[in-house]
Image (cartoon, rainbow, N blue to C red; front, side):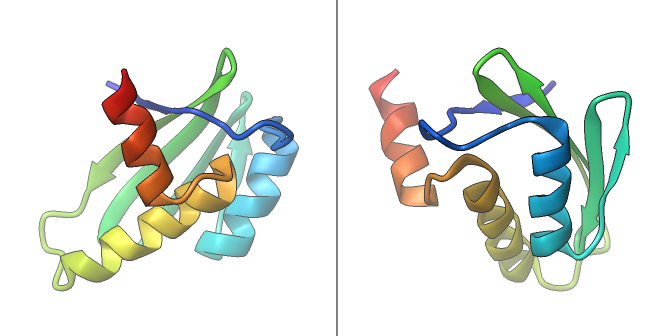
Length: 97
């Protein structure tokens, strides 16, 4: 099941822009059928795609991850670059729902 994230006004979530920002943040990325795929240390697979005005993200974790805090930090940085919201701002938005 995908987790959806709100996107800050003015931030583009078109696949080519998502791919460029993903490569910048994660160091890798691939565009297939409108979805962006990448990996991070500790996460086997990340699938990013547009769902209406929001961003949907599917992840598959790596069970043998030696440093989960680093993984969380890298993932939060990636989502911040893609949505324009920091983790603190996202938490506040989720709590308002």
